[in-house]
Length: 568
Image: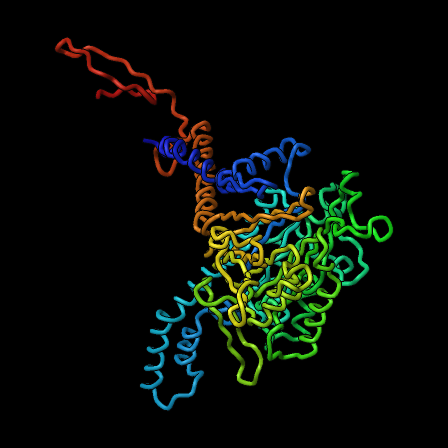
């Protein structure tokens, strides 16, 4: 069988397989049925069908006006993960040569030769493994950038989010120097999140009584298009450090490249129903109403230095001042119509056994938080009771039910979906904040239960390859009948990086095999005999076959060619 025929038969099987794998990889949210949850229904099929309508008939969509693509902890690594970065690949070989050329000091030839033997052994046991691992790691880092880019690009195209956030740990280390920080930042914006933009400083506002809207929800205009490109970046411990590592220099370089670390955004949802508009609070015409114009408040909170001790007390003071101003500029809990979405990095406090990460604190020898899995219980209570206005006292404003909202964070790479609540009917020390998994809370009918204020906290599973390339899909919508904001959350995971690598390597092999097959066919058409190696081109006249009778009356075959007849 000729090489061309062999390749042709192989490509008949390889090409369909390559096409099928590539289609699945680049359309994986379609095959997995990923979609933002729809208002007033938990039907995943209906949500998927509506996503299809957004691509075909966008004006017929009933999607939520706010759809947030939440990505956790990409952690772009770099030089610190490459064994032989910034040094020669075979140092022991270099030393062996130096010993042999008498460029080192040794008292005797015997010791010199012994050191040469040691260095040669180390070449095989140290240098070669380190070099191979360094090559593998460089290839892995390069591929990981595009693996993350594939998740961001594909989900952004298919699910059509109105906003995007990365929930901290954008980079892999807070200890890297300026040059490496700039290199990883370039990879973030030009590879992994290409097409994304940082939130402009003039848009990232400080909490205030009087404020400018960041935009309108449910309205297609230039501002809405701009928000689809922007990425709300949250500061994580690997970006700026924990409280004991956070310095002005680390915070400034993060904000220069990725945007402010603490700010608020307010989006208003226009109400087109005149009757509903007439019920909204107005100091002059409708002062007795408890309804406010529907508003979504996004708080990007840098909670890296909420706990003590901190390396820079002035930075911690600014963080606490920001949180206090968030509380002071929020609407009174008695009023309806505002939804608070907190984006932060370190999860709230949870007892051991609720999530994968248990509470953990470690401190530098000279003071300062070195590492923590959760916020402290006191700092967590500040979120629940301060920012959201929840309270265990039924006599508190709004009966302690607080403000509508949800917390999204990262840090715990495994992810966790929980519900924090406090039972107002309990007495004394029994009345305290508790937390349980969200499915358990729903089964026990805790959300919305009278006398049990609570808040959902979603720790989004990491988008890193080892955690399956996960992404969170948060839908938030407003119901005029009850004058309340509602939300729902879903996930979509690409899977481990092995399939991503397989598809691209397999496609490359198939493409090369196709090119070789085309070249072989072209060679045959040009007259080359590709069944021989090396292939030769012959100018001999065509071969003809005739028969002549032999002496016994039986015809014997005769081959004619090159003007000479030969008996076979």
